[in-house]
Amino acid sequence: MTPNPYSAPEASPTPSGPPRRLFTAAAVAVHVFLVPPIGAMLALTNYRRLHDPRGMWKAVAFFVVPAVALIGFGIASRSAGQIALVQAARVGLAVVAFRDQKPLVSAHFAAGGRKGRVALGWLVALPLVVLAVWNLMAGAAPDPAMKP
Image 1 (tube, one colour):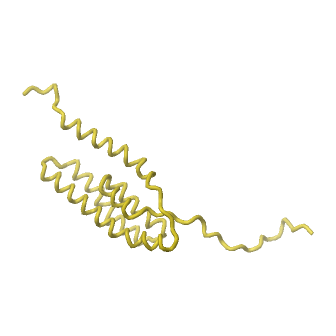
Image 2 (cartoon, helix red, strand yellow):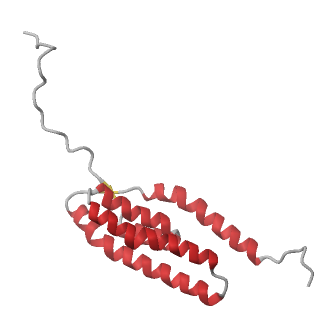
Image 3 (cartoon, one colour):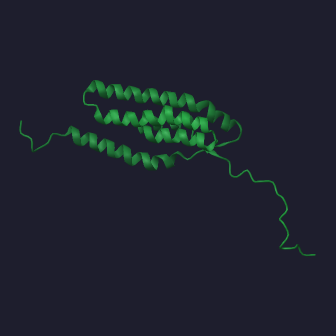
């Protein structure tokens, strides 16, 4: 007997889908230190993948907004003291990101979750780091058109 092609399909359990991948706390912290907006987006992505809207807003308030502000302050800083202050703030933000993400990611891995691909973040971060270093080195070189 062949099944009726017009009948309703049998109810099947909904597939849980592929296991979600989270970025490790160390990966988020390193990205926050090197390129703050990329690290902040990794933290935001972890909360988004866990369907945690409160965590997403927390990540926006504590990581995305300060990361953008750090980039702005880094561009505007002129003296060595200001640059040192921006670097110290980047280290502090990386520590806060690590402490925020560590319990979240540990619980995910303990439940059998998988790690995210950090290489995807570096596809965006590495060109930005190279561009920033290039700009810093170009600013440090004396301008040959200027006369002493």
